[in-house]
Length: 254
Image (cartoon, rainbow, N blue to C red):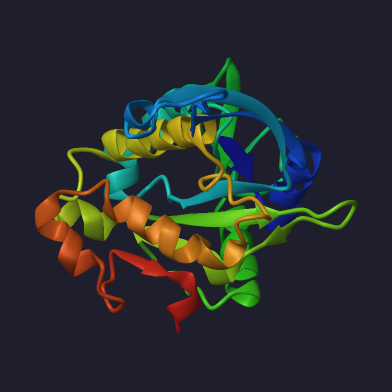
C-alpha cells in the first residue's frame, strides 16, 4: 500500500520501480537424449521446475478509491491499511487515492490523520482525493461512481520514457456492489486473494506480469477473468456480462 495524492505521485513511484528484475518459475518438459525405445517414446513427458531471471517493463497496480467516511471503509478498510501494506508484497502495488504521509502542516487545508503505518501518520484529504479522481476521469473513459472502487491498471515503461497507464486494458471493481452481492466474506479476504494470486503467478509465469512479449492487448480480459475467478461460482456468469456494474472494463465505461 502506498499513498497517492495525485497520479503524478504514482508515476514518480513507478518510475523508480520499472524496469524491474523478477525471478520466474515455470514447468518445462525434460528432454531425453540418446537412443530411445518405442516404449520410452510412448511414456508421458516428465516435467521439471525451471527458474529464470527476467526483466519486466510493466507492473500491475491497484488504485483504491476509498473515502474514510464511507461505511465500508470504516468497517473493512482504513483500520486494515497497515495489514494490506505488509501482505501485498512486491508482486502488485496498491495506491490509496487521497492519502498521504509526511505532509507538512496545512499541505492540504482539510488533511486529517486516519491511521498509522510503520509508526508514521497516514493522512487523508478530500482535496487530494478529488484531484486523483479528476486526473483519472480526464485520462480515461472511467467515471467515478461515488462508491468504494478498486481500479486494476497495467503500468508500462519503455526505456527512459514516462510511465504509461494502459487504461484500455484496465478494470474497475465496485467493492460496495460486490459486498452487497456477497462476492466476498470481507474486503480483507478479497484483497488477500489478489495479493496471493499475484505472488503465485509472478513466480510461475509471465502472464500476470503483462510482459511485452505476451502483449498488453490481452490484459483486460485476463484481469477481468482473474477477478471473477475469485468470487463465488454462483456469481461468475452474471459478472462476466459486459453490462454488469460490479466488475467491468474501464474501456467500456461511459
